[in-house]
Length: 89
Figure 1 (cartoon, helix red, strand yellow):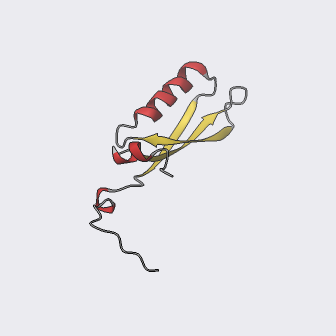
Figure 2: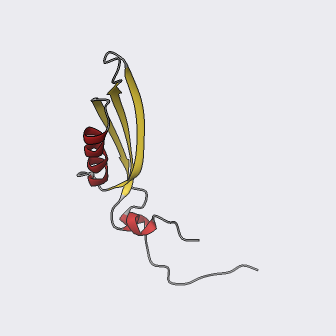
Figure 3: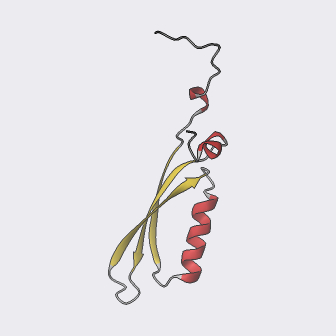
């Protein structure tokens, strides 16, 4: 079975995780954490940028900080053509 996100990974997308700290609307001194994870392109992160714009426009909790981690799951050196197949019994 082919991985659902393999075509995106071959185009350079990688798994992106953002740790978002935001202030509670009612208690500005209190910080809460939200973890966002999706496939995105480094270094521009268009999907994360779209999500953060949505947050700023629609949600009440003001952002404090965003920490981003990104990993390409399929790297160019890991994909190579196979010339043949050998079977043992």
